[in-house]
Image (cartoon, rainbow, N blue to C red; front, side, top):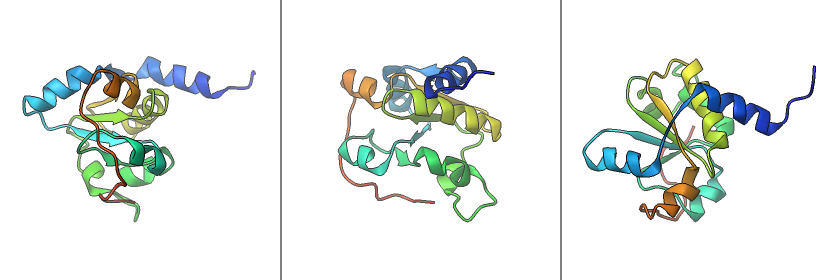
Length: 137
């Protein structure tokens, strides 16, 4: 058995998850659809630039934040099991792995934002900067 590398995990996840283009997600949200945008990057990345109204749940904390039975839960995420959830990272790799994990945890409508924040910004969608001030696990 050969040793797996990071990109092997990312490629495997991408086969099992749906993606949405940043512009398509922004349009859905502008049309009133109630999406939860979860940014799985690290706090220093989020502080530099993030999508407005996104919540920060670093990849390493995701499972605890999504599990209703842990003290690390984040209610906005726990309560979004039946709601549309879009996951973002820098370019889409961490988000793809996160979407796969959320699907394993029972989330029924969760997608990867294709290309991450780099594509979001590249499509001239709104971005903000500053430290995260929302709920943390």
